[in-house]
Length: 302
Ligand SMILES: Nc1nc2c(ncn2[C@@H]2O[C@H](COP(=O)(O)OP(=O)(O)OP(=O)(O)O)[C@@H](O)[C@H]2O)c(=O)[nH]1
Ligand SMILES: [Mg+2]
Image (cartoon, rainbow, N blue to C red; front, side, top):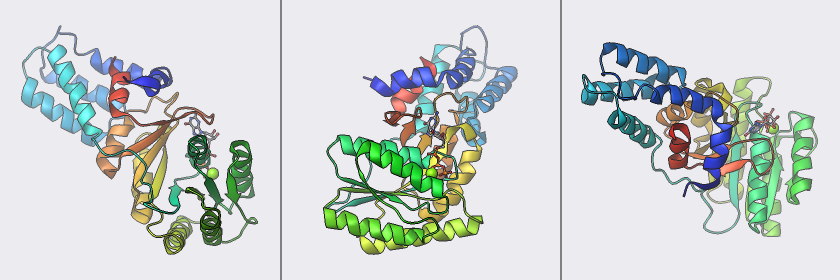
């Protein structure tokens, strides 16, 4: 039932799983839920990067329902269930335009994994028979355009690019034109993660977004924020900053493979309210999986 994500996560999440095993290790039935137990539980939840909000919520419920009771299987089930609830039951599918090209804008700080995620998404759509155009709107770094170009060649999808330093909004404009002219299904827009200043970057994103909306009704249909799981709690501040500008529709959490900070997903959801739609579990083109909250919690606890 849990499938590929669970298998990949079980291996990739080894370090995060160790921390959750430490939490589950408290629920052996050999102790009582007293003040010391609660302190230790709190300490371990925070160590697993659960974040202050979700930790407080869990600890409060433990105090309310389990104080002076045995710390056994019942408590473990409650914690597991509560964590699962925290991830929500949002629709995690990508929003697709009713007609015409679907535009997916991708934003996030430098190095978070935007370009790699775009390649993974483009490949996924391409393999499903969709006509994909990628837009190289990170014109700030010459190497960024090149990187996306290499991926596009490998995948066999169209790319719209311009010279280093060109206005990214004009690249976005041209990509929409090309997509309409060619009857493309999907446009995926790569953006810069860093400019001269943060204000610059946010203005540029706004402008790109405006241009997309003028070219194609309802665009961008998805505004995905790419967050690097290895940043743990710091990823949340980034999400809030970008979210204010692009009004994100979902999150892609990258680099879940190998990080000990996978627990940050609970506070990312709590603080942004946005669904995690995909997770990155490696550097190759196949290493992107639709997020499955059941599989995730199972991978942490089983
Ligand atoms: N292990 C692992 N590495 C990843 C994953 N996603 C991306 N990376 C790596 O992270 C690094 C940065 O990825 P990019 O896609 O270039 O990041 P970016 O957000 O486009 O960065 P800028 O263009 O500088 O803003 C690369 O070395 C990727 O291979 C992932 O899910 N797992
Ligand atoms: Mg990039």
